[in-house]
Length: 150
Image 1: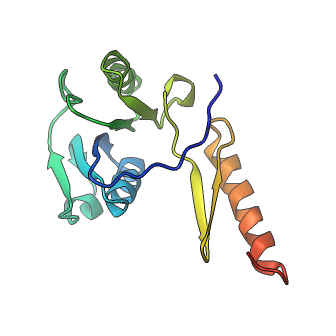
Image 2: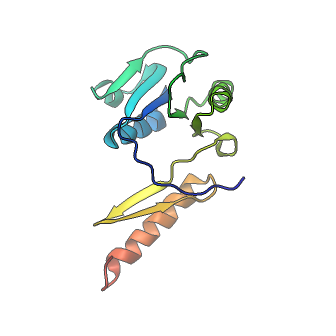
């Protein structure tokens, strides 16, 4: 698969996140920080997610129809059958879908992002989040150590 990086304005966009664990929480909060209307569907959520009043939470399992009207779906349940079902429904509805458990199955990816002043560094290492973080951190270190900072 070939991906083209984009910077998207998520203001007012409807994002449905399936999974309320560590990864789902981090992503849902980042989407809300970007101005998206975020709904999380998960039988269990983190305390951090429960405390964020910008995010709508549905304490239950994913069900067919949950992605109706979504602009983007994000799945991070850690249960392959559930994540695959989310991607299948998203694809059928022509909704972009990030699958945090299986990058090869996703139709969209969240790039690792670092901000240095007014510069945003975004890295996508073909579905390898550890490598993406390492490269982004290295770039930031180079930028901040440079006498000609960005």
